[in-house]
Image (cartoon, one colour):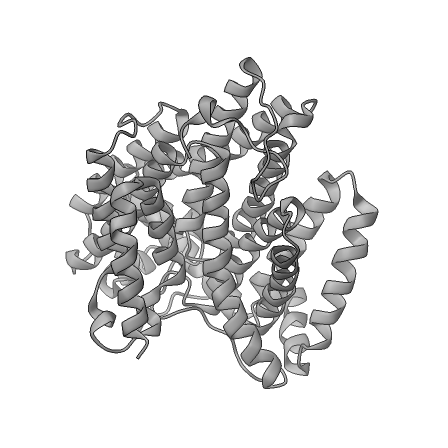
Length: 451
């Protein structure tokens, strides 16, 4: 029965996208984060909704009056460079099953094209707000379901992400949820609608519960990093503590005893086999990059047992980093956004990826600086902070997770570039507040494009 409403929803979306292509970008993000295929079991389970929406969006954009040129920016150039280098790495993969490498390449290629579509079509505040709601509704849906199960079972339900998606693992799902919390806080602060504010506040609490329910130590580190950065950067430290502490206390009261036992092992990571196993995987991917510095071993190559064993035999080259010996019966994922890219695409791809992260942070910093003394652009100032808040847990917790090509992270890279452009234009053509928006003030559409 779930197939029918989903198929009807897609049937309604398609003509809307053909009329307004930017809606396709929102639907594209929705299918990437919600992963609708994980909730259906009939005919709809085999339909590639994400690809269908992507193609529809591309066709609609081509036929529409929307500008066809993607605004030139450092982010757009780096995204294009990463696409080229990912293709080169896939061509020269050492994976004994090349299809696995090309499958991962396809996933990254769609993410990069999605990011470029965000830059090309999400050009003003109204559309950015739509993207924020897309993220919140997608991840909020998962949060509502999983937090509900966790609460109803008295904390015994172990939370995992949807299907076989990039956020299926409990640790990855925890990080995705943490990255969403700042969006909820932003929409809560700028919403005029009482029901939306209640939904955003409730959503933040439920997502914190979800992080606890995943039993992820990386999730705990990520949410602590997020709270610390907010406390350091906000001018309203007392208000933040007055809100955050009760939320944290209520969520922790729901945590079962084994959660506390699991989190206590953070203090002895050097003796933890799970963490040290990650360090082994980092060494394997480093060896792959040293062996093939330009292209890397190729996507998922170090998860291919013959390739894994080849570099495991060279462990003596990195004996200065004491670890256990590499597993000789099973290959393991990189468990780090940094070492994943390093092993997949070598030092060139790794450099491009780090530049993308740096550029996103720089774009938000520039937007913050440009809007610091502009009351009309307070929304952009706060949104730039929000993007930083979302990036902090990705940068910190991502160091131990296989999420280098996560759609939401790339969406933030793209949105940060868009926001910088908006604030730069607004510095020349001052923004005027308008009414009727879900936000308190929004930039004039004549400056940044049609709604």
